[in-house]
Structure formats: structure tokens, C-alpha cells
Image 1 (cartoon, helix red, strand yellow):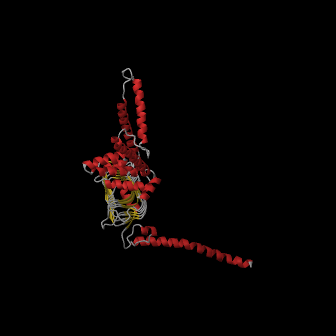
Image 2 (cartoon, rainbow, N blue to C red):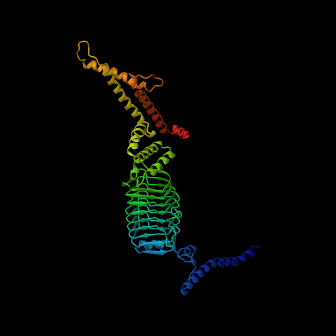
Image 3 (cartoon, one colour):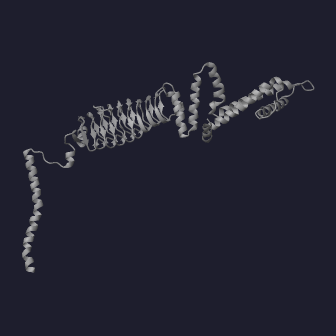
Length: 452
């Protein structure tokens, strides 16, 4: 048996050597075939990744994003229509001198251009970017256009868009970018726009964040935002919101020129705008005040809601004639505080009480003034004591006028009517103060609203 195995070993060893040589021969054969094909000028079979980038397979041309980035970084221009850029387009930190125009294109990866400088126009109108757009700190020295494409197709950004700290030295156009142009959050925090900026017709599927941005002029006409448009702390000469629809818009601490805000036919559920800033709204501000009032009520901020209502009533009063305007200003505004400022009726009550007490004190002092037995005038201490006594009686009588069921204390029948008017005024002011206090308290406000 051992001799038989020994006789087979050379044969087995020979077969093993042949088997080991087969892959090697196959590799040599594959290389030889490739060289022969190349020598004949025939197209060589390419890996799947190469086939996906750089081939035209019956549809739009597919170009590797790396080749586009290399051209742009090398100072050359790229002008394309309807092509697909495969992979990430990385221009981070680059100085792009040439024109970058890719209209109606598709970028399958990310657009990375943080801290990049674009010396020529960037036109990505109608382009679809499938993933993140990172333009943090980028500078656009010529117009940046993200408008509708050649066939009116929208510029669509399916990933997060971040232009934080970017600078647009000329026109920045994101207008006519409909059909969920910004599918996720679009961030323009502390972005500087040195020329007109247009987001007209843009759609924000989530939030548009413009906190601290610096605009020259900006328009959000026909914008649709499912989330919020946060313009907290922005600075702009003018801002237009015409036919704008958004869940919420924040303009808190924003700075505008006078009549620099246009709010017309808006559909905004919640707007955060200071009542004092309504002076910057162009046109009729009453609708804006009503919107602020309703938004503040929805948030439970009764202080802002009451301030907006007060200013709205002031504007309404200004539209009346002189007589009605004067009565409204004195009684309803100053005395009653439009039933939303409790301090107004309380201060009016105190003022009226002091005036009536002073009149009552002087009247009684004149009636009771008699010289002393020697015929000499009383000393200043005596006069001061008499005034204090008269003043005390007058204040007590005035305070007692408010109490129910108290008999008239008028000195004669001719003064009873005035006394009753005085009593009515005190009680009316107290009622106004209580109603205004209730309107300033959330729980009591609900009770009042349920009674209306």
C-alpha cells in the first residue's frame, strides 16, 4: 500500500502544479487580450463604476464630477446642458475663475464648496442636487442663479442646503424654484447678500433659516413653506412677502428701512413681529396688526396680542371724524385703555378722584372760612391743619362715593346730579379696569371669550 502511494505522489504533484498554473495563465491571457484589443482600437470592457460615470447610454450624458471639479479648479469654464454629474462635486476651498453653468443637470452626489470663491457666474438653473449642498463661507463675486431650467424645470435640492456665512456680491436668484426646491432645511445663517435676492416662487418643504442674514433687498413672493421662515435678526432695506404662504414667519429683532416691509395677501399662521415694527410695513398696517394679534393669542402671549389690538384701535380711531375721534381718544383710549390695558382706567380713576377731592376741598374751605375771634388771619400752621382736615374729609367722601347704597352727600339738591355722575364715572372705570385685567390674564381671558 505504501509502495502504491509512493508511486502516485509524482502524478499528484504534477497535477497540483498544473492546477496552480491555470490562474496564472488565465491572468496572462486576459492581459494579452486587453493589449490586443487596445492595439486594434476596440473599446475595452470597463468596470461598472467607470461605466456609470462618463458614458452616454441612450440618455443624458454622464460625467464624473471629479473631472468637472478638476476643470473648474484649473481655471477653465464648464458649460453643460442636461447632463448627469456622477459622484460628489468637491470644490471646497477652491478659487473658481471660470464660468460654471450646468442648466437642467443632475448631481447624484454632494456639492461641496465650503470657503470656495467663484469669480465668474454660477448658473445651476433647473439642476437637481440629490444630496447635501455645503456652501458655508463661500463667496460669489458674480451672479449666482438657481432659477428654473431651459424647459422650465425647477432647481431642486433634495438634501440639506447650507449657505451659512456665504457672501453674494451680486444677484442671488432662487426664484421660480418650485416643486419642493428645498426638500430639507435651507440654512442661510449670517449670509451676506450685497445685491437683490429673489426667492420668488420657492418652496421650502421644511424650514428656511435666515437668522442674522444681511440683505439689501429680498423678496419671498409666492413662497410656500411647510415649516418656518426664520428671519430673526436680519437686516434689510426692503423685504417683500406677497402671496406668501408659511406655517410661521419670524421677524423678531429684524431691522428694516421705513416702509421697507411688504405684507400683502399672506397666508401665515404664526408671525413673530414686534408691534412697534408695524411702522415699517408698507401700505395698510391694520391687517398686519390683526395677524400679529391672532398669532400672539395662539402662542398664549396676551401682552403682544393686547398691544397689537390697542394699536389697531388707534388706527381705526384715526379714520373717524374729529368729534368721534376726540371722544374715542379721551374715553375709550385714555380712560378705558381699549379694555386691554388695566393701568389706564386705574390711573384715570386716581386722576379723577384727586381732581374731584381737590374741588370738594376748595369748595368746603371757601364756605367754612371764618376769621378768628380777634379778627386776625390764622397762622400758616392753622391753615395747614384746616386744609389737611378738609382734604381728608374730601378724599373719604370721594372714596365713599364708589360704595353701593350710600346716600348722596352733596350740599344741596342742585349738586346731586353731579354727585351721581361722579359715582357712575368711578364705578365705570373700576369695571373697565377689571375687564382689562381679565383680558390680560390667560385664564380669565378664556372665560371672557366663552361669554362672547
